[in-house]
Image (cartoon, rainbow, N blue to C red):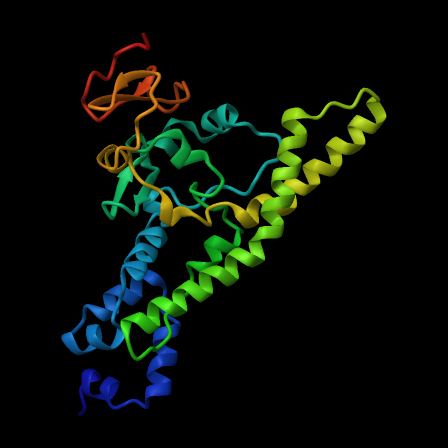
Length: 260
């Protein structure tokens, strides 16, 4: 009887490529590590390893994707809504050191900015993690070129949603309409805009997320409320559910220190 390995290698290339295209980002890397020949054929790039990490953080054991968007919930309400149990198991991918890390290894911008936060359950970024974007190319340069074209196409499609989201966000931040009826009508219109755009654009820049240590190594903390670039103290939202006191610090460094 022919072995599974020999059958796999004798498949026509178009069928072989079709099988690979149905893998998810996690399975793609596992498949490429099954043998030297498969690694050479798949030829995974740094992008593929990043996609594997971003798919891993959406697994239930790492907290999964975010519950679908609830309009009107601010960051403080959202922190408390998750509860201490959810925060305890919530982990995030750092695409700098290429690790899955606890939430306290990231600053607020990484966890709550619409681009770098985890995507929503029904969002396109979550659905994109179901299958890999791998396609056969002759060279690594050709693969990277294809990835760049895909990213540009996706960015172009999401641009209109980004613009609409920013317009509604600015209205809630700055606009004021003295007439109550008009104000309520505009509020309803902008809340509807949030519902339509937030789930689409959330999490689409997760590959840019970096942990506190990576940002420190890249001199990302030069403007600080306290501490200094050699020993930065990164401020965060205060919440009992996150089991933090006043600041996010490097793990184990002065965890009870108050803001000066």
